[in-house]
Amino acid sequence: MTGDIGAAAPSLIRASLSRTGKWAGSVAFVSGAVSDVLNPLGPFAAYIALVASVAAAIIAIAIVLRLVLATKAMPALIFATSAAAIAGGVYTVQQETNSQNGIIATLVPAVAELQQSLGIVSEKVARIERTVTETQKTVEEVKKSTDTVAQKTQEIAAAEKQQTEQGAETQKAVEAVKQTTDTLAAGQQQAAAQAEKLQATTEQIAASIDTIAKGFAALAAQGGAIADPKRPDEYYHNARVYELSGDMLNARRSYLAFANFDVDAIDPYTRFATLLRVQDGKAGAREVFGQLADKAKASAIKLVHLEQFDDAQRLDKLNTFIAAHPDYAPAYF
Image (cartoon, rainbow, N blue to C red):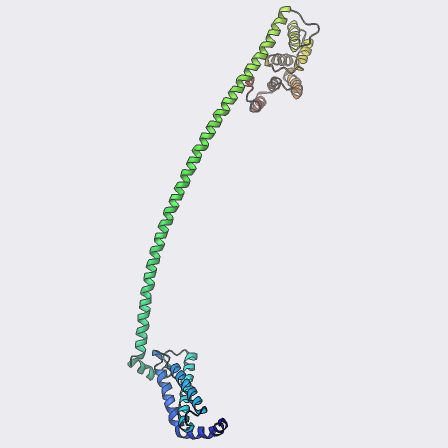
């Protein structure tokens, strides 16, 4: 059965084209031209092409299934096919050329004037203008809202920044006051500790000097040099006896023997330095006391050694000595 239809199809098509081809093609062309002119209002060429294609497919299926007589349905199939082909071609050319007002209006100015006179283009333009206006208003409102939000955000950020800066400055001030208070308290504690150490050192030196002085007084009461001295006060007694009698050589030996005991008493070394300056000059006294200071632990020997330098050097060395021995009282006199 299907073979019979297939064999008869060419003759049916030729017969239908001879009868309906001209008017079907003309109607389809007119439909394509109308849809092109109406393109500003919508893609009517696409609509016609879609409807005609669906209709052609339905008619063809009905003919194949013998739901309708081929002789009666063939003109409709030719018309639907022609309409789909022409409308589809018009829509394709519109898309390729981007002709919003239609191909004919682009090529023929009279058709464009006809579109305007009929209000086709003007309606679309007016609709576009309304859309643009509404969009512009919406954009302006959104911009105003955005600007307001941005301004509020900046104000809040500025306030927060100011509060943060004030808090940081307050914290710094509190820390500075606390640090100053801690420094003052530490300074007071250190000063009190140094005063206690200085007092203890002064008392210790005074006790040592008092002990030696008592020994000196006892020896002085005996008179004359001790033949076999063994204690530091005995050597100092002999040094003073020899010095007063003019025996500077034995006085010097007795002072050196006294220094070997490393007694931390300032007066004996001061007298010894005076003797050395008289005999050897300041350079000689500085040399002798330099040797004693290298091996001695007594601060008195080191201090008397510094006093043998010239004024400029002596001041610098004394400042260094005081910085190293802040609790040694004789250094401040």
